Length: 81
Image (cartoon, rainbow, N blue to C red; front, side, top):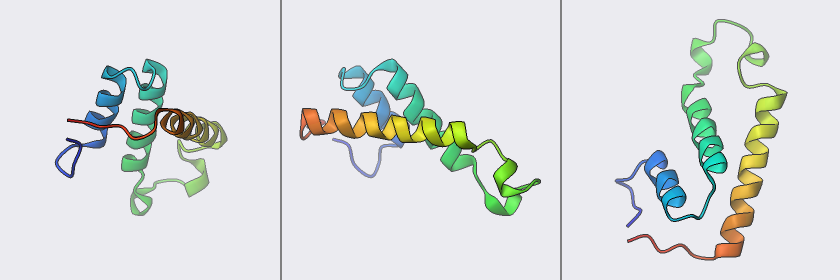
């Protein structure tokens, strides 16, 4: 069961192992997660807009989530045991 005890990366691994997402989408989702977890605004040593989250990062994030939403809409509810 996917619950509070499982991390995002374990959940994305489950989606990959079940053939729900591709390796490419799995990698992009984990990349988005890592970017999100590594952004600490109070630790920035340069201006916020000069960090690794730029226009191409935004596009990559948006595309990954659009693809994930499309897949989940097609698959319906996913039962994880």
